[in-house]
Length: 186
Image 1 (tube, rainbow, N blue to C red):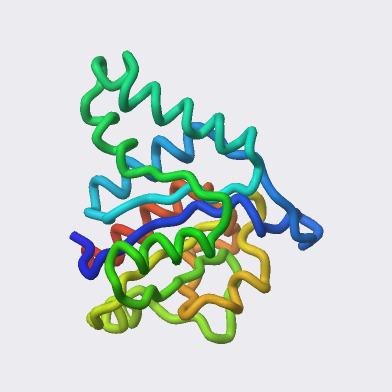
Image 2: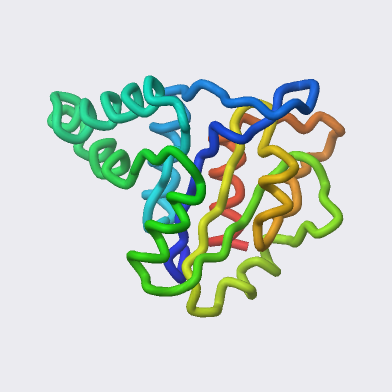
């Protein structure tokens, strides 16, 4: 189980496209469901969906409402419990502010990326770093990943997940689950 008030954030802006241009991406319902379920399974305190687009915020809230207050929650109480962890915000700064206010302490931000970064650390090292009193938020990028400026602004950057081959393009929901498992079980 995760410790020290660990949160997840699914970032839809600023992320990059395949040409490494900064863009905003559309949310997908499966990412919300699967990352919320992983957050619940591994004990994350909360899960933020970050998008500056009002139509995407409205869509996310409708999905969450269906599974928490609507018929979806009656049919599947396990999914209800997981989706109750989701909060929708317009920016990552808003995420940091909310967590700081909730815990009255600093918040350490952690970027993830499929690309190796010169300052990347292992999940084992991150677990050591997380033993302080700060809350932590792990940011996952949609589209082709978090924008470089976003990554550079984070306190920590996790090493990419590497398989035995050179192919390295996991879905964000798969990456979130793998990182959470490594942080809890390795």
